[in-house]
Length: 335
Image 1 (tube, rainbow, N blue to C red):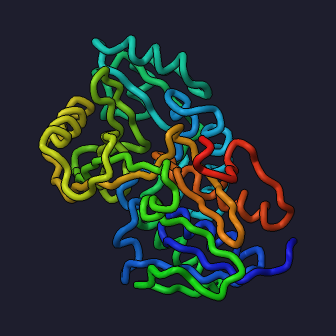
Image 2 (tube, helix red, strand yellow):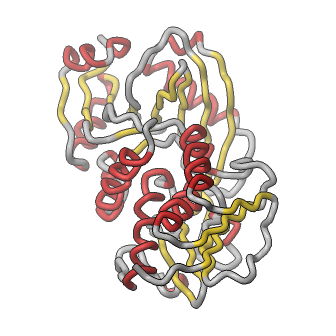
């Protein structure tokens, strides 16, 4: 291991928390800075579905996301007892069966289920779908309890927490910047991708795992968070606006949820809102080291999936100087 450093981490979302936890466990003196006076008040992490789905992401992401993501799933399972490893289901209505065939061709690690096999593991989905794809190695979690667990864990490791402090830290050997879009002035190619979601509570629906409903216009996913709570998401809009969702998006999300299971019609709407995910032009995450400063940013839709493994990569870089060319980038303007 390298000589212990005094490290300041900017941003206490899921990325900053994982950095703080792993670096503190490596013996570094870590201070975690968050500009909000309350934990997670401004974190886009709270708007995540928190699906740990590296195989499903193969449909639209590069192979590096799968490889990093599989390690990310393992780290969540190792550290957080609330990680649920029941896999992910991908389904399509009979009229959209070609969408299911396309998704199967573009992804690996799945088992094709007949309608009867689907009904056996998720009875509420019986008799409405042309079968399903089951990705058994995938997992999910509820974001807020996971973030609070990580916060408690970093404090237990001796990390100093500075809430309500968004200024540039002074006096540290190293600063690690995990501020997402707040760092955009320093990272000119960073952009925001708006993701809208609705959280509902249902006494009638009982799902054991996330379900993705494929549709040519607006595919959605439904993630069970426990205690009858479900997150329905999520739009992908090239915009940095956050706050309330649009009427069009609400209609799309709720209509698709009703198509998944008409029992959702009786659910209560608990929360709605939109966050902005930080992304680079190629939607790949970046670790950008400069003198005394490291940016960890651009996780796009994969914040919960990739945050643990990026923390591992930063820790290895500090220990040995090792860099993964798929992730490390000296100058963000080069790509």
